[in-house]
Length: 109
Length: 114
Image 1 (cartoon, one colour):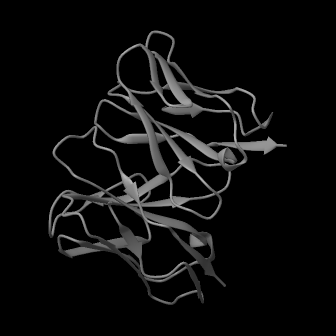
Image 2: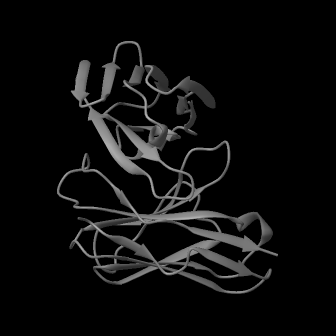
């Protein structure tokens, strides 16, 4: 079966750095997405990786290793507004999105 | 900015009622999707549509149907609501020229079936 694993919840301190991991086992791979979802709101796009390596976008970076079936989202200089759920999703060989359950990130002052 | 709107943020219905959830996007996107989101589970695809009057089943279509009569509007129908359909329902759209296009989500409808 197809599976996406992410930690259920993480806690970090304002101003610090946090890494949210995502491992996947899917039938084929056509890219990996990260979305941010604040409580009660719509998920919003953060990043898309299809090649191995690190993509940096401001305070957020996303890394992919296809051989390991692994990605992480790195958030630097954490702010209180970064408190949200972070969803990992993989596009499989049929171009269907397989979603992880999401990681709830709690930022403490 | 892409805008995806859903007809209700909160909805309470009784078992056996017919329920309509409406979704409208204003960016002329080809693709539209309906998901449900439950605690501890990833988003699960119910139905999607790549064109007007076209629909495809997702992973969990049982108990649901959809309608896409106009490009901008995609409706999810629960023919006879049941308590296990209590959930958050999210609509999304994407431009559609590439499968790797970003999906843009609406704010969601939290449906409670009593």
